[in-house]
Image (cartoon, rainbow, N blue to C red; front, side, top):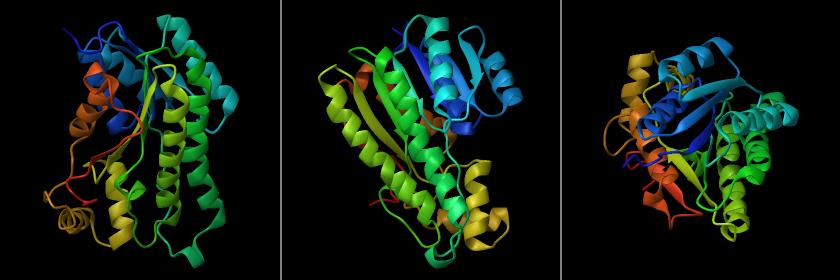
Length: 251
């Protein structure tokens, strides 16, 4: 039996590697998915590659009206909503707190924290018992490091949002959890590593591998499999949890 047979999912950050890998995993298990993001061409191509089980919508997660319309559109297309993956994010810059640009700090928190708040706010009225909300945090939502005050603060903030939603949704049978990936082998992560180390891409990746107990980056598909676990009935008694997929970095 397909683990998400008949389910409908709404995924933000849908044009990114984790969003697309998650959508592929969900569709393979019987779900229909709506990919939501900012880059129309990438969303269109991604949905086309997934076939008739996928739709797409352009929406800025910091804009309440756009998020509300995108969620309502997915519900109109599918007739239901069972899984929400709040996955949109930006990295900001790497700089000490004393030098961190205030506008960048505000933007990072807006995309991650306000964005996830709006996605959940507008999706919750459509969810019923058995639904799953998954918010993508990060290993630095459990730890932190120098130079990443905006990103780490935002990712920690998502845990607070998740725990509040988990308490509020429990009486309706709605589960809410955060997923905490470590370094993933994708362009988003590689840009962060280059900025953090000042080294070329390959050398920066090697330096980060040295920080990971398992000694390598995750693949997007490995993160997607954890998403699938949280979305499916396999995690039916899991809510309010911080699930690490970080190769041991948060130990």
